[in-house]
Image (cartoon, rainbow, N blue to C red; front, side):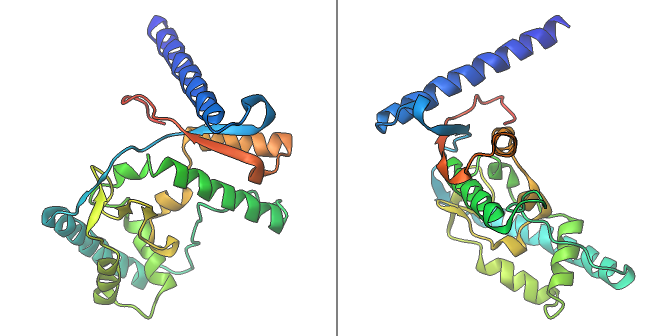
Length: 220
């Protein structure tokens, strides 16, 4: 119990420190934090590095295995697998509101520069379910075609320590080729933002997103 209380206190202290830093960033921009809606998001400070041959080849090996598995699944299972989207919002949202929220969340991820994407490594979070979905959505492409498509999006660089598709301005993959994890995942910061939008009826276009680096041990 004492260990849990210390962890909770540490989390509260970190949240407060990040909030203070975000408020300072707003003031540096000439904005009063009390006068606007704002939210903290993680910050990825990694710089671009050359995509080395070993990392690219490790991804190719991973993808070939997945394609072999997905091909067998597509031949034996019936029914369509829905394609999730990171930009989907509550089904009760009006289309215009859903679009505004999607645009705002995309802006938040752009400000963050892919804190969670860094964990994609040489697998890009692609798994059997993701490849089965992708194959079913593009039945005109065989395994060699899909390998060639992914090859196109392997750029000359990636952010240091990040996913092989993580470029300096975001993911190089179109959303339809990303993993289900990439399309569905929300960090803790964005989960709180989404809840606030729903509860308070805020216009997401009015939210300022402030990237602040979490501590190295933080899962956020």
